[in-house]
Image (cartoon, rainbow, N blue to C red; front, side, top):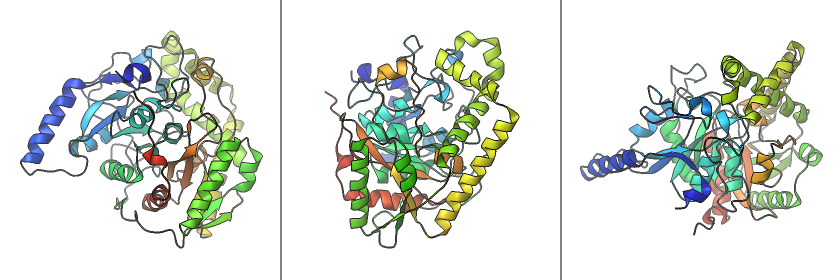
Length: 429
């Protein structure tokens, strides 16, 4: 069994999947077709509430917890007629590092099981990449949809903040949490986002805004598209040579499809990344503070130490971090107001981490662009752009103005159709 090597799933909902499939077959045969996800197998990151099915957050704290209701995102997927295959692995509460004695095995990268399948939404990335499901739901507070998508060679979308309801999803940092789809292709991703987007009064972060046809611009060429590249920032941080080379080739592909490539300058991006990490840590601490005090032994060491580090921050530091967030959001708004259509960068500037690196709790603190779009709330799409020197996938990240997911799918699909990266799948024998 493939998943015995990948550990993508914590819980496999076999009986429910069979029931869902039988129901879908009856409905479709009777002419009651619900749409493109009807009868399609999907998995959920195991912080998404599922009534009657345990939701563990990959932690001993919630080892056998069964939610009283479904999360909003699962409600919408059920209405679309999906077949639920199960709940996928993650890093503890979407934040901690894997440890050798954790309650469930850590997910591994299908391209090479010595390597990690990205951070947090790791099981979702591994499951989609290996073909264990059509698509999966991930969450993204600091890159945790896009990073697994990048190193697993699939497509991941962090929608605009407030586009998809977080109701019934265990929070990490509510000011930065996003829910989004992970799929093998851009069009499939747009189909999944179509099913889960929309206003939800139960979620205070949800924004009441019309849901467009996310696939409407797929197939259009890139004439008139201006792609901004933050060159100075990319030159100031460590970027693996293989990643840099793949990124330059990706820009040439976009140019060949009609896009105009331009250099942009956004100041203090390094400060923004540090500020974002601090603010996420503090909100995670606030959520877990009481339980950490009562049952510290139930948390993994990596998660516990990281979250408790928030107690060292001063009010002055936190206010400064919030000010940095405001400045970087204004800076990106200014870039888009200048006429730049999308901002491009590598999703992850360095190669995938080994599993041993994670077990050693060596947290990657190198600056990169992935967290920036959690700070700003802009939608950001990760699409495969080749392979690094280790044979693990690398990825192109595209960010757009708020509420412009159709534009991202247009650019991502144009790039995808001009390359063959999404046609390549890991060896699963």
